Image (tube, rainbow, N blue to C red; front, side):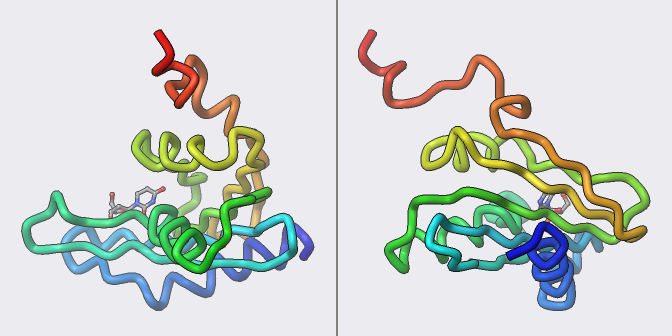
Length: 131
Ligand code: THU
């Protein structure tokens, strides 16, 4: 899939977003090594803290369907600026794909490419548990 097509898939998820509290809609599309794509949108909750980011919804869908070999992620938001994954999502993505390429997509149709390694320096993972 082209970068543009993956970004459009993330953008299309904005209409599924459930964000009555923040009114900030986010869509994500996660591409696997075999070309399969899993999408997600943010899912908020009245208690706020149980809210899910679009990225983690996409990861949960992929992993629960037997896919863990992520190669690219597109994150779309209806903003002029680029929206970057939150710290929790960066950590969740790192668990499966430290070499992930992250594409940020804004309402102007611009794409910014960032490696996850740049978004999450000094990361913590299973190798850190060895002591
Ligand atoms: N959000 C995402 O879904 N992904 C991001 O990358 C940034 C933030 C959501 C969480 C919450 O529903 C809303 O955006 C405002 O923070």
